Image 1 (tube, rainbow, N blue to C red):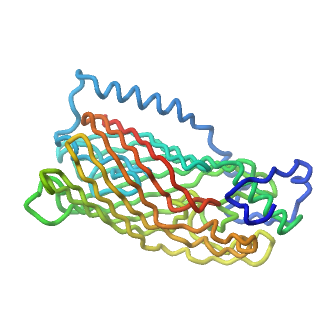
Image 2: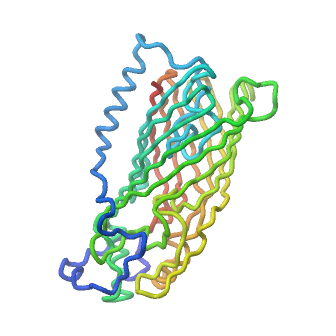
Image 3: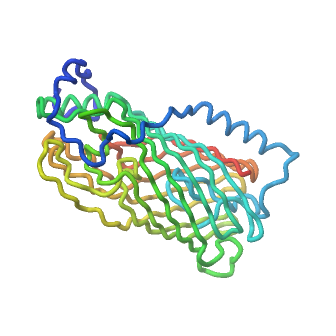
Length: 380
């Protein structure tokens, strides 16, 4: 198989005898799996998680429960895929839930992004405290099509022979995201006479939980040259909800800046070191925080129905690794701006359903990473 087939049709996996015959040549980088590392997560059953959310949705629609919070319908955010109150890709400056400055609200959500070769399942919770502070947690699990890694392994073996690094058999990646968001100034909803938006400062601590690839093997983040398995994103967001504008409809605008070291949103680790699994000297580079822009706009066609668009700039620090370039496909680690086209249905204040066509701007070994996005949120 030639290197040009990475990301396309897969070659058969090497026989077990061939795989075990290549030993000792691959140097395990510092961020690769080691004895004593996390043994990996138990499988998360998306069907069971979805069932729990659906039961919660039925409960949420029951008339015996009072509506959450005192804010009107369609003045709360959704749950973006990292757990913060926002859209699908981008956090907004709003605090989770419908609670006012005297109330506490909580939300729970489950989302799925399916690009064909990848499936990203996310579940999380968020708490909004007095419309001032938000605390959140989300867990992302990325399942990779085995054909992609089999194609990469075959291309490595063809190019480097017995010296080729061996990939771990389990390519599932799990990312925990713990977030906090503080409202600094402004009122995106209540202060309609002011042109100024609501400002929030947020932080997301991300920790990559990877299965141990096994002795003499390497996982995708380490192969790509990620320096660390955890990192912190900092972001500043400004959002404004224009009630009755334009044309009697409501319009939400949001924009912000993010400082991050993450690759593929953190699913490929953080920071960068020159990746050379063959024992050559390694060096760090590109580990400083980099600023990235993000923005979104949502138009409410009616109080329970909205459409929107979001853009999120991504870094591109892993592109250009020497040994990947030697395969003739140095662009398989390239990252581009992510975007989505979003539709939202709000049957009540307790339930929000969002669907989108989303382009994640490239994922490992797959430059084109677009597909369907579906999310269900329950306000408790």
